[in-house]
Image (cartoon, rainbow, N blue to C red):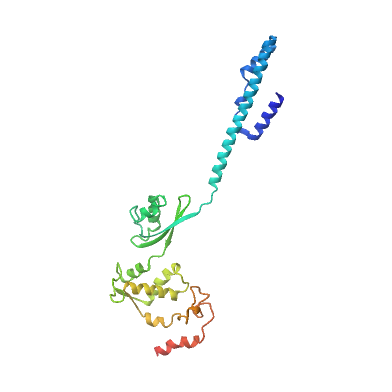
Length: 278
């Protein structure tokens, strides 16, 4: 019994409070065995007590094994939950939406696009309307980043170039006949202002080439830019060949338009517009 008690003490130290010590309570068989000895029972009663004591010891060991199994199952469940909690959250997809500021509803296109990832559609509409509360009625471009735990983040983009041009000329839509049907005229300063707004989303770093990109959208929308031809003479010159292309980085753009080395005969090219204007 001393060995059993030592094993029980070691088991208690190993698994702590997870072990159910109901098996350690004195059983009626063990009590009867002690009472029989004190009363001077017969040898047959003593033998019955010994057999009962063996059954009690087996029950005690079975209870310890059961408690150990329950504790191991609990620890295993806790470990699995801890691993699930520490799992890294990754982005599983993104959706680009063009919506009206402050007026998002679960109707298409929001519902099918957001619901396809199992996200909370009303929650997205609420957050989008809060972000665009100062842009009610304006066209807003957003990118919805979907995470693996069904959460999401909303990234605001600049308005579409065509929408900025239509607003500048006071129209709601562009021309159906680009180059022939003109819906309005803007100045070169207004073109620069729109290019500065769109610069973060364009694949260029200088305002000069951004203005060229915006002008291409203006031509397609039927918007005329006053003074664009005169400004184009001072813009970045075209590369002589595809091997000399500058790329979108300012480091590759030749001086004085960028940080790269100046072009050959750059002074003559810079003086050419003045002679033409004269």
